[in-house]
Length: 203
Image 1 (tube, rainbow, N blue to C red):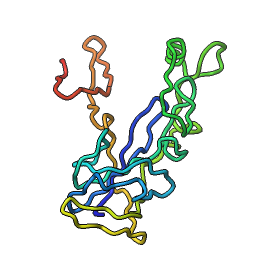
Image 2 (image 1 turned 90 degrees about the horizontal axis):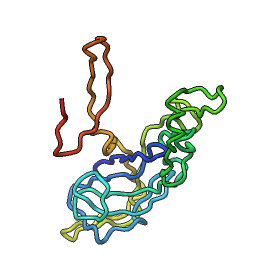
Image 3 (image 1 turned 90 degrees about the vertical axis):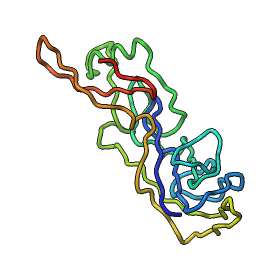
């Protein structure tokens, strides 16, 4: 194992650490991989497959990366969550909770819960507060044999552990930062914008 990369995904209730991409120095045979071939400290391994890049996929393909997918229901999967009307801020579930129209309107109106009939806005963190934001970090051990496409094999090595050195955040990393300046007031508003591949930003 040369290196390991943490992979995250944003759900309705927050951002979760969902996989580790383990890099090898040769192409790995995806058909001979299994979830039991890897362990990630404090996490449940859901499945393992090869890929040509550090990214999850619907189906594995031979490549120099092994994608070790982790259970999103692990309590430690959540990096930051949203409490209040947008979600329960917990670590379980598939993160599909969405605000209703009335909740969204109330949340935009105020962050205070002191007014009757007003729903408080979202709060970062499993228990509230930006200080609860965690870094995606995992330590991987190869507990089973990993076979390369040329037939060579990497034997299980419980003594060797690799910790993630970087993190990729699909979609989130693709947001661009811009600033809107109102020509009448002269005031500026910074904002983030996601531009799908193949599309251009209108000016």
